[in-house]
Each structure stands twice: as structure tokens, then as C-alpha cells.
Image (cartoon, rainbow, N blue to C red):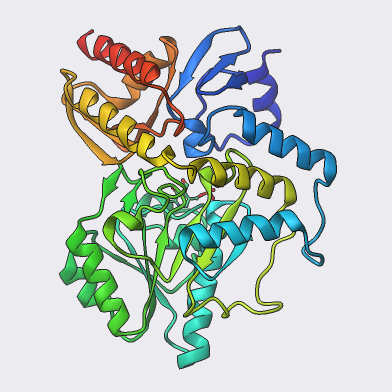
Length: 388
Ligand SMILES: Cc1ncc(COP(=O)(O)O)c(C=O)c1O
């Protein structure tokens, strides 16, 4: 029996998988069961932010595995304290809650925003506005928050109290921002929705109008955070810090972790017993997270991310068959003039490149450690594929 057959026999068929069995990886490259090599420009959908088995990350994680893999949140651990302190210091937030995924970090943000409003204003001010075309996760609540109709089937009833504003449409925001709203939640760059960065004027309007009504702004930086866009948080490039920011994906270099960060205004809202997670802040994940944080905040690291992102974007835009390049930093969407993204990704796989799609675009989320040589290799192969 092949690995594919074995897995499909026992694992629910929720994923459309490529016919490849990834066996091992080192830095930006991985190898399949048959020994074929790939350069990974998807990072496990943005998670292996330092590539596969980065040296400092591996050492930190292995050391923690050998020391203590888990204890409950009934006790304190030094590694959780160190990671939380540093993450708050780097991002400028007051407090955080540790979750295990992006959806869970967003669940926490939604609960926090509703309780903030309930504590201060009482019932009836619980609505959360999100953006059309957004993606916030796969739990029932975060599916309800997701502003895409394709996710609103089968699982009725969905969680009530969400409405959707057209991205970059300030009139649509004004119209929906009534007295029942407690928060606006947005991705600065919509990832799954097709790698679209929000316009500055719209982001400014969200902050201005929310602040005037004491409506919280939640930035879903699950995909854009931890250096992906060239700054630690994408919000820095828009000149804003949300009341609540959620992180996951690259935060612990490929271990399951999410975080919901809250500013002074709302850091005390979730009190004893109001939220929790058995695995949240797991010591091994915190060790991985601390290694990522130390690497990404080291002098010069983000400058290099920006340099490589500029190089990648310039080279991609010059390839015949590329219509435009969207996104920010190393979060890249490639719109094609003729070829279908999914076909390009399948041919790229045969040629030893792991790429992603988002809607009708080819999408790249390379490790932040991607090298110039790997970028050149990608450009050469893409040029070949688009000329075929
Ligand atoms: C912006 C955003 N929010 C939330 C999620 C959900 O994260 P997870 O799959 O870790 O639950 C994703 C995943 O793609 C995402 O891109």
C-alpha cells in the first residue's frame, strides 16, 4: 500500500493534497519519499518561517522536549513567561493569551471584544464587522466571521452577530458601523482571499471611526505577522496598532501555537475562568516561539527580508506571462495573464518547487530565510513554465 492509500484509508478527506509524500527537510529544501528534492516556497502555508529544522530553533525545541514537554496552565513555567514577556515587548502589547492555532487566537479575540463591550455597555452591542473576502478560520465562530459565502454552507446554524463590510469601501463601513457593533476585524493583507493589501485610507478610516465609538479594532495577523510582510507586524507599515492582534502560523516556526495580544484598554477583560486552553502556551511551542522571535528581531534580519522581498517582486513582475504582483514583503500573490494558477503550481511541483494558490493567483509564502539563489531558481523555473 502506498503512503497516500494508507493515509486516505484512515484520515478524513478534508484536504485536496498534492500527490507527494514529504519525508524530511532542511532550511528551505525538502525531500519526498522517493528522494526527489523541492524548494519550498509555501512554508507549510506560512508556518515554517525559518525553514525546516533551522539550527537555533531545533536546538531550543529539543532542549525543551528533554526538559519538560507539557504541564498544565494550573502552574507557571519559565519558558512561557520568557516568551510572553518578549512577545509583548516586541509588539508593544500589554498582555496576551496563548492558543494553539489561528482560529483559536481569533476565537479569543472575538470573545474578548464581546466581553469588553458587555462589561462596559451591557447587552446588545456584540456585533463584529469583518471584511468581504476575509478568512478567519474553520471553527464555527471563525467561519461565521469569514466574509466568504463559500464557507457558509452545511454547518447551520452559524454563530450570529457578524456582518461584512466591503474592503476599501468607507461608505460600506460607515453604513454598518452602528450601535450594535463592538469590534471591526480585518487582515491588513487578505491572504486566503487572494493576497490583497488593504488601502491606507480605508485602514485609517477603520481606526478613526472605531476610536470615535469605542469600537475595538482586531487585526488578524495570523498570516501577516511575525515578519512575513517585512515588519514584525504588518500594522506597523500602516502606522497603526490594533486594540487586539492575533498571531499564529509562523509564530513558533512550525509548531502549533497562536496568540491573542491585547492593549492596555482591554488587557484585563478576560479574567479568571473566562477563557482557557489545555495546550495553550505549551513549553515546547514556547521554546520554538522564542527561537523564532530572537531570530526575527535580531539586528538586520527584517532588513534582509525586505531586501529579498523587493528582489523577488521585481524579478517576478518582469516575467512574461505575469500580469501583476500583489501583497506585502514575502507574502506574494502572482496574477497571470493567461495560464491558470493551479496548472502552474502543478507543473512547478514536477520541476521541484512547492508553490501555493490563493483564488486565481499563484501564492508564495517562502521561509523568511529564503536565499537569493533560491529566488533566482524560482524565477528561472516560473519563466520556463509560463513560456511553455
Ligand atoms: C488570516 C488568517 N486567519 C486565521 C487563519 C486560521 O488559522 P488556523 O488554520 O491556524 O486555524 C488563517 C489560516 O489560513 C488565516 O490566514
